[in-house]
Length: 489
Image (cartoon, rainbow, N blue to C red; front, top):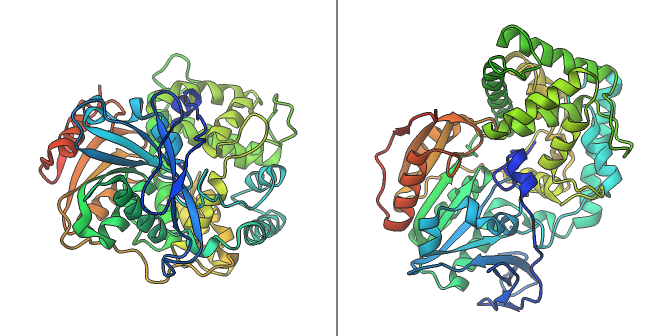
């Protein structure tokens, strides 16, 4: 499964508060950007890039771009990416006033873009909304032959749907393609070197850029890093362990709260969560939304995972679990919808489809479902609640119509200036050891650790992290490698 997207800070409560205004009326040029006002101080444009970077004079596609101009003495542009893969950088930049510090906004135009295949940039499409509902609702931790067969058939349908609807795009949506687009965007913005803030999968995109264009880097902040050198199923298993660590932190906090639905210790609470998932597998929870979806184990798991991305959302999770223990899964379903960017009318942004398309393009996955079954069994030993679910999530890549990148992505970016990698010790989606690994692999990587909870660290409450990031972006002053920011009280 792709790294579950940090859509607009990947927090349930935060994502609910954010809105998107369409960029319209913008022109396209091959070598520059024609900006048009698109509301609330933002300007929008479209950049033409080659569909196939090996054929620069061939077919072009449009990349949707947005910027918030600097409010003071301008240094240049700061490109931002929220991760995913599949999350909209345009949506993320729309919230620039809350996701980029004021001092940075004063000195930089904040620029977001939808990577190719995402949102407003030639979006990958695979299934109609009702079929996506069915796909997401498949039991992602099959414990019977029937569930395993249904999951395999669903994965095949998904891959076939992507080929039927977006086959022209699929060979060209990998991270390296998006990094080359980013260099064309840098040039179109008039910046000699790139200044960039990437979160989660956005760290992989930033590292790919640095590896391809080390001499064109000014400053990169890679927050909540991915370790793309891991074999794909090992990456899934490691991510599942991250979710287990985050759940344990939540439960340890929950049992001290007055509104916690669990009695006793965190260990006993974990057993109750496991029992809830087993119960939802046998008999779906109540769905008061009236949309016909069956809240089985998959939707329940996604609903639990979503608030783990942000400690500020833990009270929402306590309430949702209290309802679920009484048989009502409606709030958990709403939370899952936020994670998947499913709208109230039942339609989806293309986050899930684009995310899998990029994931399958960036690595070579096993082509036999038995490999996933074995990896899921092994993952259950270290991540019993989430391991099989996360491992099986990438099964469509087994049947993908386009061959993945066989060489791996072991970025080292020789000759690049210092690159700042930030990791959170109890990050649910990108475990801290991934940040350690990426910082160690980059020839100029500098690691900053944050002792805390939630996915990514910048502007999530740590004054220490915020100060180090802002200072580095503005002045290029590099923190000492191995700096640790203390936990928020």
